[in-house]
Image (cartoon, rainbow, N blue to C red):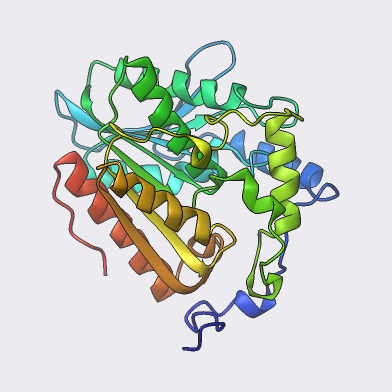
Length: 304
């Protein structure tokens, strides 16, 4: 496979647009995801954490006195999406790893810029850690895209506040660095789903026009990464976030935070969500589950 080619297993790549979320499309997409989020989760429950935050909760079929936990944060460029986007992963984690898995419904930009979405995620993490059937020392935080950025920021926030100590962070093509939106050296022909223009739009909404970017808003700007939980970062070579994710993984390792970097050649942004049945996507999900199982101390048998 040449350097610029898409993974042949990801057959939808040539049909996909380079950008999905724009100022024109964001509103309709938000309305659709809001409708999806209103549907009760299959084999799960919706629980109110406080006046502003709910979580979709999935427990394993066989309950134990103290189970590991997972907090999942959905993607959508800080602009779109709902906690229902985490239902599939949370069900799988609950059933295959015996964990209490929750997906947090955080408020979205631009109506709610930083730090509101991050504080909503922290409220969900605190709720999970307080559950009597959850082992607070075995909680992983996970996120995709902007949710990965929020999960990375959540790990930093939890470390700084010292109330909860997550055991692991699973970051799938995380949106970590607002400075990527200013780059002019990126070949847009290699991108799918999320473009430089989409990135600029998402960051502008999330930062709310702040002149100085708070490091917790863009974790790649955070100076001290020491003392964070071990991490797994996955990203494709044709993802806009590839370079910032590789750089963040290197910084974590330099700070003596163990970080496994999983790079998928020829994969675009969100490939495992767009084309979940492809061999490449299934292998990617299995690597995620193995990493979670190792971190949470549970056995995992890969599905065929």
